[in-house]
Length: 113
Image (cartoon, rainbow, N blue to C red; front, side, top):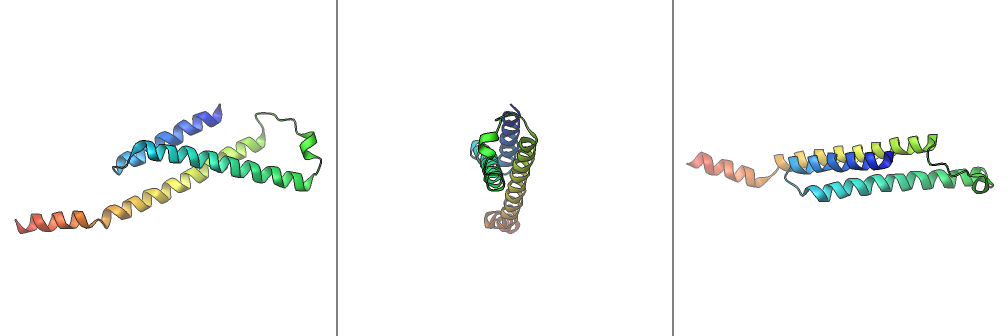
């Protein structure tokens, strides 16, 4: 349930970024969902591999609970990854706006009139 809430928040967060810079909202919303799920899968797979190498009997002892401390850590890891990519995209979009030659051409045309 918590992952669904985080996914909705990430979708809206990225859609807001896309809206501010005139991009397609649902593309970036789906990107956020993909990033979150990708970070979750990467973290949980890495954790499981680590635990299997440290304790070969780990898979037989697993209780498969839905809520544990490692889940909280994986949520934080995934949220951090999604936020980091968000900041990178935001900075890239800001640089793209300042270097856009179309805006410079419009300014030159306005000065000539």
